[in-house]
Each structure stands twice: as C-alpha cells, then as structure tokens.
Length: 239
View (cartoon, rainbow, N blue to C red):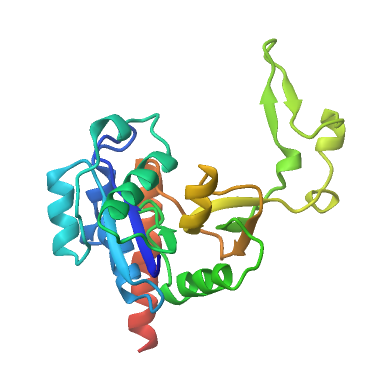
C-alpha cells in the first residue's frame, strides 16, 4: 500500500435538496468545489468520486476527478453509511492492487476549503503515532452542555447528565468547550479499516478548522452563496 487517495461521495438521491451535489454554486456544480480543492493539494495523489449516477460521473470527470466505477444502489440510499461507500471503494482498489495507505474523505456539502489546510490535516495524521483516524472539528458557538432534548411528556430535558434547567441557563463560559465535526476533511487509515472493520476507531485525532458552513438545505445553500460572493467582492477590491 502507498499513496493518498481523496474519496468524494456524491450520491444522487438527496431528498432535502434534490440533486444537491451538482446544484450550481456560484456558477459551478457543488461537487466541483471539492474536486478542485483536492486537485490543488500537494499531499493527495488521486482524486476519486464515488457516485451512483452517470450524470454525476460525467460532471466529476470533466472537473478532473477519476470515476472508475458506479456505486451500487443498495449502498446509495438515505440510510447508507460512510463506511459502506469507503469499503466499497477500497474493495475495488484492492482487486487492482491499488490500495492507498490513506483515504481522505472529502464531503461535497462542505465546499469552502483551503487545500493547504487539507494538506496540514493529512500530514498531521501521517505523523501521528497512535491515532486511528483524523476528523476536522470547529468550536461550537454554544456548548453542547447547554442543549436539550424533549421528553415524551413534551418538556425540555438538559442533555448534560446531572444538570437541571436552571443550571443549563448559566453563561456559556461556565461550561466546557465542545466541538462539532464539520466535514472539512477526514483522514483514514486503510490498514486500520481492513484490520478492525471500522473507519474512525476510538483514537480520533481532532483537527481544528475555522467555523465551517455545511449544506443540507436551500437556506444553507443561499447562505454559502452569499459568503462566496462577498469573499469574491472583497478580493476584487483588495486587488
């Protein structure tokens, strides 16, 4: 095994935002944003897209990615897991004696990335002596210790064990800082996946990123469109 492969999932069956992965964001398909970041990386050797759609495959190929297979429909459903498509891709590569040492999982729903930050994440995991995987996270604006669930009786219950509602209302500085996995970049070990049939394991290295926007809804899409437009206008004025 050698090398680093970026694996970008792009199934076609999104229900919340139909055809989300190829919806145009600032003039180009959402999928292309992630492909371009990976192609600019100095640490990624191959950029592959895992999709169940011929249309998506064509778009990915034109953007410069490899699409050596179509993902089976049974692992391209709403309930399908990351592990499903990652193991499928690795099984395909194994039959061709092309297994990489590392898989960089890049989600197209997190389009705003810097390739140098992706490279730093890859290098951090490669240099780790005991981590089973790496996941990007950012600090949550509000501690998870201040969050609630709703009881069967329709009352708010603090998620933090042993807390009552009044304690949950304390200032955020009173609570531990918590972090949210944000889809910016995950780095996985092929050896670990093959040996333990898990993709992340229990020793996950945190990789801190700036607060990161993800796309799940029309509203998310519009917000990111605005952010990209403002950034472009700022760069024009700056130059």
